[in-house]
Image 1 (tube, rainbow, N blue to C red):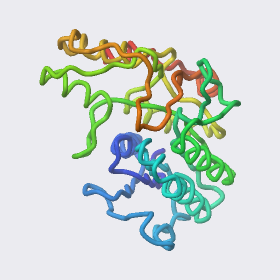
Image 2: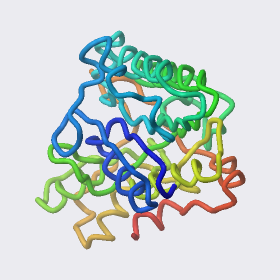
Image 3: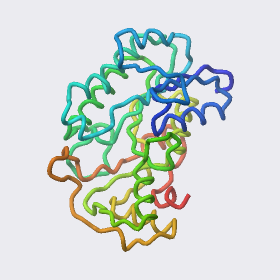
Image 4: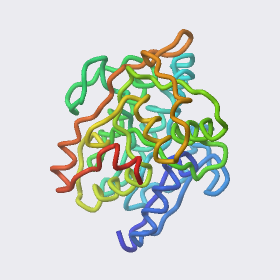
Length: 281
């Protein structure tokens, strides 16, 4: 990565700052674009020529972490979800040089309501967010050098006003507020820095295609929050085990979104951590 020009889109989201930091640590020349302070302020959804002004063809690597990630908002506004999560990707691909390596950050919510761990070949999103992100994957893969990572993540936010699941849970527990942990909702997230590291490992290896990027196993969200509480010596009795992961007025969520990560481990010749190991860090 030394001396290569890297552009991170969505640099002021949850994952973006970690992507910028990882690329710089590898010696890349990094530009970050986001809607918030701390990076080049540029709203890619504001106008039809917003993407064109970025001179995309000048970059060796482009990482797209732009997304509308509010699952319930996507359900209420599916057209907006498609515009951001798929339409922006189509515009992005249209401006890239063929030699540019595109890394597109997707989601575990492209998978169906079926037992996990899920392999990459079978999709079937149950909500508008997942459908829009799957549409974005299709657009991203129109570019000849694309790596799609389907992932979920947690860890300390580096962006003011943005909180991860773990930030929210630890904050509530520190204030001694009871919180619900969904015992029937399973996932395989990674720490934000781990996701960023493996994204650029994929670039370094020239790995293209669609890959799951998650922990090697998984937990229910109830078990996950309990593990966080133990790691931070907070009162786990404040975590209430509740069944299901969906509630009235909210978008449907598939209950088991654990990921089979065998494909990316084989391609990059590495081993991803377990979720317990990530929480312990």
